[in-house]
Amino acid sequence: MTASSPSLLQRLKRLSLVTQIVIGLLAGIALALVAPEVAKSTAFIGKVFVSALKAVAPILVFVLVMASIANHKHGQETHIRPILFLYLLGTFAAAVVAVVASMMFPSNLVLSTHDVAVTAPGGISEVLQSLMLSVVDNPVSALMNANFIGILAWAIGMGIAIRHAGDTTREVLGDLSNGVTLIVRLVIRFAPLGIFGLVASTLATSGFGALIGYAHLLAVLLGCMLFVALVMNPVIVFWKLRRNPYPLVITCLRESGITAFFTRSSAANIPVNLELSKRLGLHEDTYSVSIPLGATINMAGAAITITVLTLAAVHTLGIAVDIPTAILLSVVAAVCACGASGVAGGSLLLIPLACSLFGIPSEIAMQVVAVGFIIGVLQDSAETALNSSTDVLFTAAACLGEDEKAQRLA
Image (tube, rainbow, N blue to C red; front, top):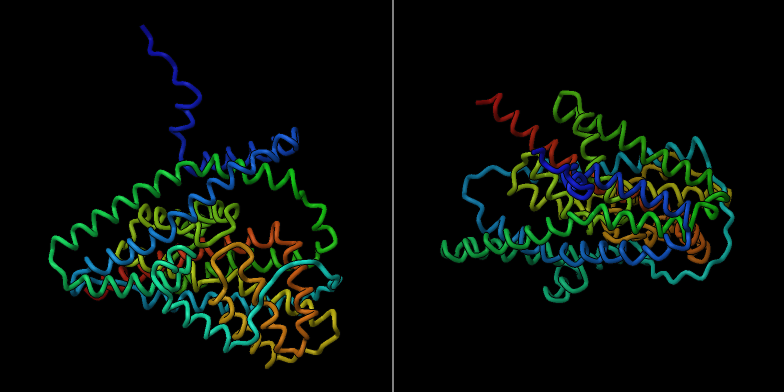
């Protein structure tokens, strides 16, 4: 007697998560093309998935970082410093790439007014003040409002304090961390369904008609992000590992970049990156801190967005840009990107700050921000995919590089 063949649902469950996500993506595109009205109704599914990710991300970061530091053994090796260096190097390099591309392929904007409610910082000092206030935020408020700077500060502080507690307290904290991680894995299992809803509703509602007028600007933005993802980042990883970087680069783009592309939130993609870091066999004491930190400060895509849109406005207004000013813009864009919010569209709020370098008034700068929202269907998705996948990429490169260095010295 032959065993019954597995059902379609059982076959789908046997597939890898990435394969399931691709199936959800294709199904969403097909539904949007065949039945747009039905596809619009799937927006709720996508919203539930993204909301679930955003709900677990703050508590996950707080508990995981605190438990990791509290249970860290004296003398145990971590690689946070080289990861931070790669984060800063990658963000600055992305800004430089954006400057070069904007000068080679200048964009002209149609600066029309749009009713977009935006509150932008008035200067670099205001950004730094905002960051400092985020650090000292009330921990309950930080968790409720997903203030990841404040969450990290309290997690690190509590973790250091609990290191001096008894073994039982640290074991309880470790069990709590495992429990939260289990919930996160459950949420991630619903990624294919969530992405199906996001893709179907987005294509059915927005389409790509609004992007036609800004095709050149969008091409420069996406071209810069592809260049950084497929050329600049591999060069940095090769410098660190001294071997072919593309297997690691492609893995990070496939397994982290795809989900980040559709959730459009580095913060919401933290659980995905933590799971990928675990599968790559990285140091948990390292990635449990570096991944949440990267979602806050590792913003190569944001640096590209800020630089390209600012220089598009500069070119449209006929303002001359010399090399020193371009270098200064790269530095400012990198600093601003580190302060960009981890939610969708966060980098656009910092464009007026960069525009102020060229004496562009806020009224015009806000119109540039509005242009950013118009092309945000693809721009913000690609930006987040680059930001989030690079968090894992540089964490893996630093961990593997330091391990190999230690083996050579041994």
